[in-house]
Length: 577
Image (cartoon, rainbow, N blue to C red):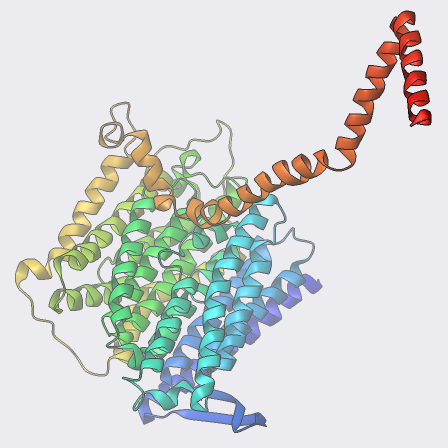
């Protein structure tokens, strides 16, 4: 009974807070208000540690989304984690996670940001290793250590900012833009954001974190942990706008988008495909940020949170129903058996692809049109559009494997779609996945806009989308003469599937040489020369000589007598001398 009550209380509390934030945000936007609270905790040698809270439309709107998604996810967990003995511990961890995120959202102060930032990293570790097995432990360690790099950079930012007398980044926007130290701080903040939002070369932890329970994946990979880096850069954007490092970030995030899109097409684990899709969308947010459009990045961050959480929830229902199998090759035809889940899955997939008038369309189309309008080089332009095509590609491939191909697991099966607790929570997000794009469009951008482009450039998004759908169909249509065989060799497919070998590079690549040197030292010194010159070596010498003498004494009486006479002669000679 207590298990159900903690779920319901947490759901109710978070949902009500989310609604409160929504109405406050409307009020703040209409009156153009910002509330800035701070109180001093400690003051020493002209430095004051201040706890501060910044409430403006952006932080309130983001908090509303985080709380809405987390409330729905907790309600969903009531059914999904039903057989879990320690459900209350799980819910407490999720609530702690949400609290850390909220602390990060409302802090304009880099110290309180660190508290939320580190809280996210720590609690995510506890959640990733929730199902305790060797795979979860490895994934948790990779997640925690990758995020630790970002934490270290934030700590360095704190120590640099000590020179200026305040840790409040709002104070530096106007007069510190061209200061060299400030650009160093900006660079550290960008690297910290890249670790949290899993850009190349820190991408390998994001698919690994799929070892966590599915409700956690729905929360972590939609609106909390991975968006923390994007949110930090949105807040710091004025400070970073003209930096050289932003151009490097644009290249890296474009490549992340491209790499994740390709890898998703070669992955067969359902949750990892959705995780790679998250990685691709994060690349999109980061790259539009590096072009200096924080509002657009924030808009896409919010719309993406809705349909991605829904996508993970649908994946959770399917995995539950398929007896914990995550491999999409065993699935198929599920739209016949679980129509409501399939409906949610398809709509969230379409929103991800940017099908007109769903949530993803408004933000994605706007971003791509701004890219077409911007003064970019051809390589970045290609990365954007190819990655958009790849989104359609893997989404349609997923639809083919899950909905259209035949059921592939057992000849006798019973699949049903009547878990109304999960369905209710999914329908809340379904409603938001359809409406949130147009709703946010009116809230965030207070004036109508018109982006004027040539016809073919305006239609380019639709062209690459249609091409993506066709390729997705051809690749997923598994016949004996399927197109896959002729396109890529095994080696190329392996390279593309392994995220350009990034997981191997960030694990064995970093520790192989050190562990190898350790092994060589152990073998040659500890178990080699030092043994030879100490106890083991002395033991060997004594043993060898005792065997030698034993041979003399046992085998030949004449030699024994001769040696006795010889010793006596030596003894007398020594006495005489």
